[in-house]
Length: 451
Image (cartoon, rainbow, N blue to C red; front, side, top):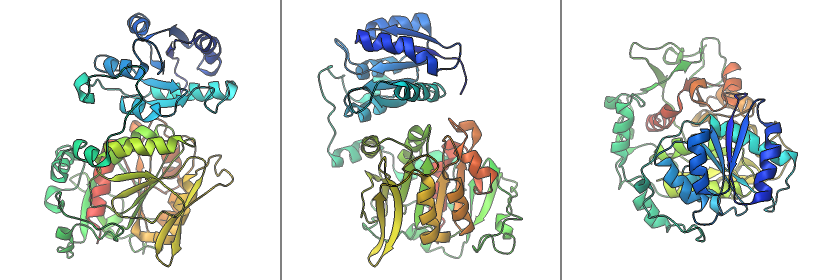
């Protein structure tokens, strides 16, 4: 992340814009160059002249607000952008418009100091590594928004009809065409209309349950952790690993894995994780067991992130609350600033969200969640670790694997920061390492293949 950057700052506030222009360079890689513009129209010209690697864009500006400008820009020019605003309500809309990240401006609970500048610099460096694709302006489904309008959320029932119209079968076919799911002859998909009652324990697709005699499924990987010397109490790795899980590739390039009943999916991510999670979660289709997620994210932003994801997903996405009961086809995102654990009660598994000392210098911590998943779910869990800086989640994922869980990790090529997945891979916590595009298909394949 020491690449020299060309950064364009777009803000109509003269004092704020000039202060960023003078001070931000201290926290960027040596040799980085900054330019500024005071409105979107000036920014348009600067982009063509300056050719920035990344843009820091304010929302509230006269004539044309930053979000509307971003929508129009991305229709023609794929520029990684971090959006900033004093109003947190714009976070969800900015990310939906194509922003890589969102940062609160001073005056909304943050001080303008070196810590703030360092945070912006890290977000800009991370965003600059993203590969941005152009989007037709019509993709947004509206005619634009005036600068003084607030974002308006659609009713839940409307957004579930409007977003992700593809059927489960169509999505599966898409994965299969890319080689991102298991063999079509082995993968049965439940079409829309098959209900999974709220709160029920996930038992896999009925069509698959009628074929319980078939106990193997294949799914694609880019790298496989050799299990030959891995000791585990699970039935998968017992006796120095079974024949199905030796870490050797088949002729088709896929790996056989003895199926297990999966009743929980746990995911951890950090730097670059919001976009990685968006790609994975929006591609998932029911029926699926409950999904619990820890993403390193500040307080308040976790709720906005969950709301944005819920607008885009078929699954129900929510910020986790203390006492929540796990339900099938629901995704629970840990609230910023609180550790999330799972606890066993008489009525079933519930979520516990509570403040605590940072673990691995962060709160919430992936390790805290993974530890409880290993204790409560053992071999019935699927653990996934995505892009992120540091090593949070590595030890917890190893504990999950030793308890018999299936574990996946994002590969180096598709990570924004190959830190957490690498730490987990290096200590043997990750069984299967794969590109980001393959993770959603693999999750559905493993869940569909569970007994």
